[in-house]
Image 1 (cartoon, rainbow, N blue to C red):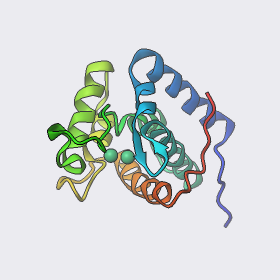
Image 2: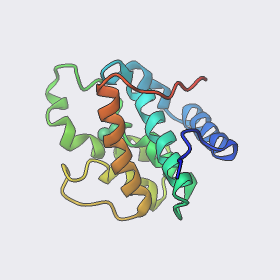
Image 3: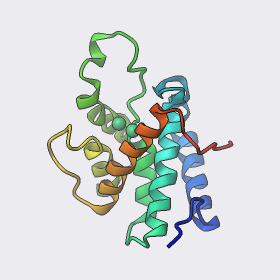
Length: 161
Ligand SMILES: [Fe+2]
Ligand SMILES: [Fe+2]
């Protein structure tokens, strides 16, 4: 069966609305100042992960809370520093950044249980505890897929705003 590569209009609007909200109410746009993988900024990476997480849920008709899935995915790397810069505080970035992201996101937004779990557990199995809800498993999987394709120079989604 052919799977769609583009979001439905309804889900596209949901993602667009969430991006606007997190940019206006918090510091999501600051993620444009730091690079993540290859030539992809943390912001582009986060939008990629949110887009593809929603697309996966849509294609496989997964029973998810779409709002939490999208918000958690957009905020999963909300650590707000450039981890490529040499700085003692950035040591062990891979292990520690989910906690930094959760700390920042909790300061700026009111997060529900699923959104917190998505952020805190997205680096599993690097961080030992596994995700506890379907939404967090999706982001954990899609994050690795996006990291790989961005590192290989294929970030695909060009989000205009
Ligand atoms: Fe991450
Ligand atoms: Fe990520």
